[in-house]
Length: 136
Image 1 (cartoon, rainbow, N blue to C red):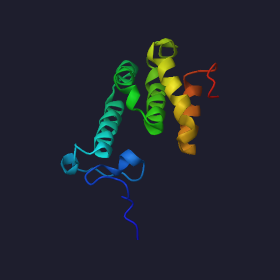
Image 2 (tube, rainbow, N blue to C red):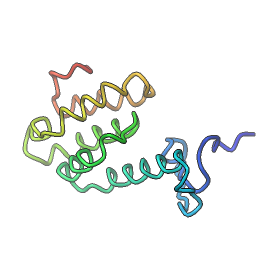
Image 3 (cartoon, helix red, strand yellow):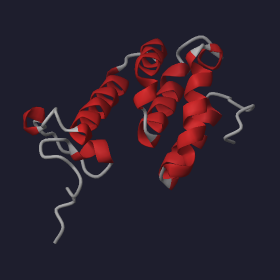
Image 4 (tube, one colour):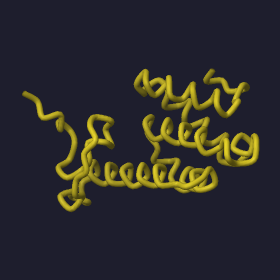
């Protein structure tokens, strides 16, 4: 039987890969490896997106780390913006300077993502009233 860890470096939480909820210690990750380094960066970004308390903090993470976003992180960012954006000024997320950059990255990753990413992204765009978005 498979452990479900194929391709996942030892010590990296499986939650980064959308498999199961499990906490792990990152001490076992070899930072010199390109794969492990990228995985550590994505884990750090995921944690920052999940810990952001409001839309402004989320957009700061987007500004700082967008070049490292994969399809999952793009979806997570848009989904979290939809949840936090309601409490912010109406339409402020869509007018923010980082929004077009995030959409552009999202367009580039949509084909390589999973169907659930597309569904979650569609929900988030609807919540944000992003009607002019080419993704819809």
